[in-house]
Image (tube, rainbow, N blue to C red):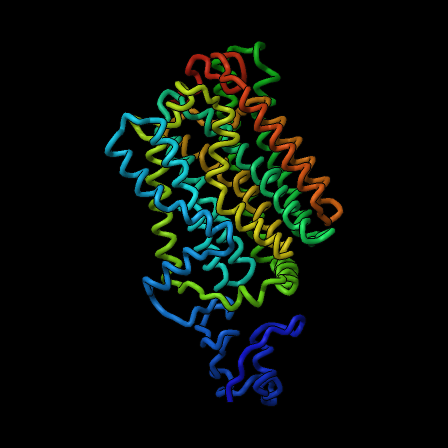
Length: 478
């Protein structure tokens, strides 16, 4: 006798519910073990699909390998209406590639088309990561999904760093690191609070998600602040060449320490406190208003998830190369000849396109009253940027003999610290509403306006203005 799995909030795992339905839960031998024939009884999920060993019932597709029609239809449908809108931009992908090779002299249009084309490709990474996460345990799936969402950012940073001639793109990378954090904390979290608050007067979330995330952000902000504070405090009292070398060394040591902090954070989530996170995330699944619709949707197979990720990462890498490749260097062209400052390019434009997938996913979760999932995505992505991605780009720059340090512009780092403090106060009561969300969005708008008017610093005038190439020489010397 085979029973169909039904969703019973609070009744345990799906496997336990199924056992109760077909009368297996009490069939155990004298040692408390299930009889051998019961151990091998097939499990069927909510859609009647036989669950593959090692795959969560929620993520079982009922198919194997790859089916082109199902693959295309499921990917285009994506997770929400916003994601479907983003998928309508796929025609820009071949157009951007064609323009790069056919008209390399059209720098402005090449930048615009490749910038837009990164939206659907980043969205596909987010969707494929979400489909893959459904097949894995909660915490592991969430970590992998968050890491994949940050893959666009890592690719962009690596390409910009590799193609930075005479440190021309390093100010953009520095600004983009902080801009990515600001986009998550103020814009994405603001929209989560605002959109979720439109359906409910108030939404709640678990303490472990908000407190751990906010504490790590404060620690990361402190680590990112130290090299800038060191430079600003000693500038003028010792020669610039010596000061720049010291800041570069401090940045590299700080990057290693931040990587250790990220490893501890992952271990905390995966091993020692995974049960606490599981409880919070399972509670969100029970509160999901659209869970029955989500469970009924067709799913990608494991193979299709991998294929989607390969396609999306390949496209993202191509567009990143076209935006910052030699000899075109479209980003450098926009900054130099089109009057867009390094600050606006890094703080606003680059983070918006690289974080689109995570933003759409988190906002959709907030709309469905899954605030723990939304916060885990927002804070997890922010922590990854602050602790892992920023450190990775410094260490890779070290290997490439580039003077990539953490000596941020004072304006950028001050805005970051204030944003962390503001968001921390909003998270303290473990409640959110549309007022807090609108305030976060308005603050981000103010930052965007200020960064638009913020000029590129003159040589040797501020923290990020390279003076005499001393830092570069220090990088060459190791």
